[in-house]
Amino acid sequence: MKLNLSQYPSAIAQASQAVNEVEHQLADMRLHLARLEGNADKISAFEANLKNDNQRRARRFEILQANHEYRQACDAINRLNTEKAHAVARLEHLRNEFSVAKLETRLAIAQKLIGLEARELVGL
Image 1 (cartoon, rainbow, N blue to C red):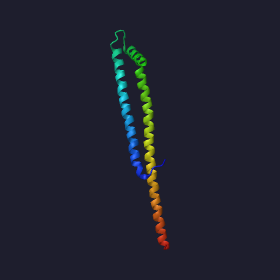
Image 2 (tube, rainbow, N blue to C red):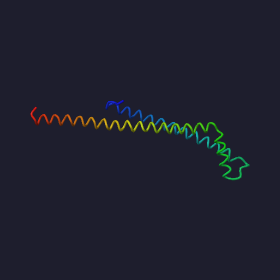
Image 3 (cartoon, helix red, strand yellow):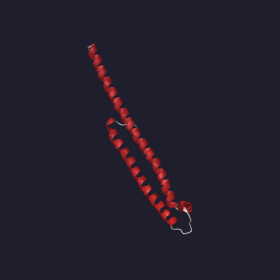
Image 4 (cartoon, rainbow, N blue to C red):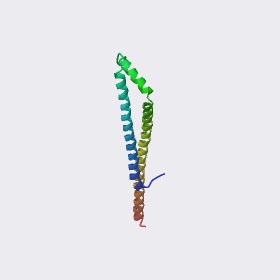
């Protein structure tokens, strides 16, 4: 659906807002993920039977893999990244359409002016 030239600025603003909303959701989800990872780090850091960093990292990985909430958060981040990519593509598409519409309008104006000038030269 092609918009009128005057409709593009608000459509672009709405698309930009959609990108911002997805970015906000991504930031919230990353913060949630960091909390879950911090909890896993805390648990693995205080387990006395773990002898070295490799064992602690492996235990941390096990804790995170067993955490259903962590897997859901990872899935949500993947989904939001895809959603953001689509929103950015929509925004860029609207910006490009707006540029083309402006150029087409300028061309139409120029063609009308050329037509008027040609008629004046001919004497019509």
